Length: 495
Image 1 (cartoon, one colour):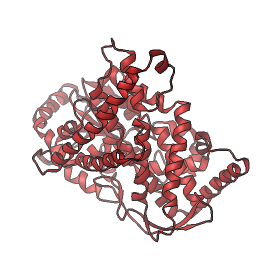
Image 2 (image 1 turned 60 degrees about the vertical axis):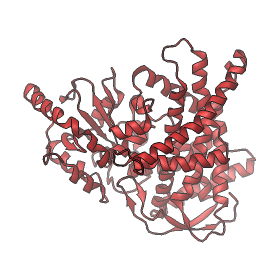
Image 3 (image 1 turned 135 degrees about the horizontal axis):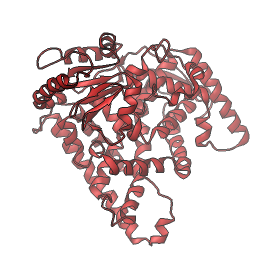
Image 4 (image 1 turned 45 degrees about the vertical axis):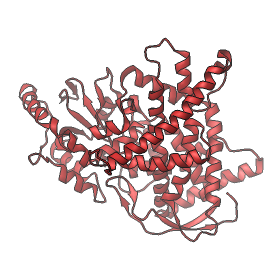
């Protein structure tokens, strides 16, 4: 989840101003540190008060939003200092430096987010959970999402929702892919988190979540009628519903026999976290109900934004690259014929074994840069590759700059799925970080890949389509200007 919120903060010009009260002390400490050590990275703080914020925002409205980083990298090097969003920061476009910051050995770095973000997520936010507790929760959720039992069940759930969505496209003259993908990705994730099936509660949760998430970029003013106020009220209603579900589940768990629940496979993320409570009642870091509820709510965000946007952009890039679309279709039609002939059901590994499909997904994630950076704050002075990061300073690790660097990828602005055949294992190196990295690597990265793979498989084996020309908007978040309108034609096979 944390990896997703990073990009909201990067572009949050208004919420960033709430940091301004800290700017004076940070600036004065900067002078002291520079005189003392002389190893701060080069850079410029720009204009008084606003720093280089205007240049930063302006770049976000262009077709190459990393131009802000590229210009300064050419002047000062891969790591430079600047002043944006009301605070002096160090920006890293160096994959090796990013790796050290993200790995966070010794808990030197913590997430750093504006006051409005901390308020909207609350005191039990994933973003404010650090150290041993963060590692514990990350391991619990990650282990559940990687379990064979979960993989088997979620594969069927995703297939079901994708097929229902594709079936609804028949005889519809025009579709907006960005909206269509959002219809099922949220349902899939909520089912994995708290086993909520289609119902009035799910519809209510979706409506309130749409309202809640709008507050991630807003003025930090909590007065009736303001965006932040409305989002906080929506969060209260979401919290109330999720709390009811979690309390009912906890009561059922307490009534069951200890041996029975110990030997039962967890149904969802709520089950996993509740078992930690019952199994470690004397543990000082046993999870509270409010903690569990807050985490479950935040974990819903990828289902509303990140995953459907990745699917939408994959369709756009394939529409603009007919050769890639043809090859992907051939690969998926071959798998469908094999399954039809054998009569076997699809499984997780079937979808993940589609090599060119995985290459397309890799390239979509690299070019789109939906998660373009994360923010960290140094708890003490730290030196990386001879560069000083002073205590209290923020570090922005820029993923998009690494993904669009010619030193890392030839012709980086070209959509080229074939590049992954050449790079091979580089998908695991420091130059490819669409899901973040280190201790806060997205625990659902494999689930996200699976969901995109299933969607693409059933799409290309069910329909042909013509997409209208559409442009990508990078500010304040990555979107398609017209939500990617397409016209589909059935190829005679039911989804």
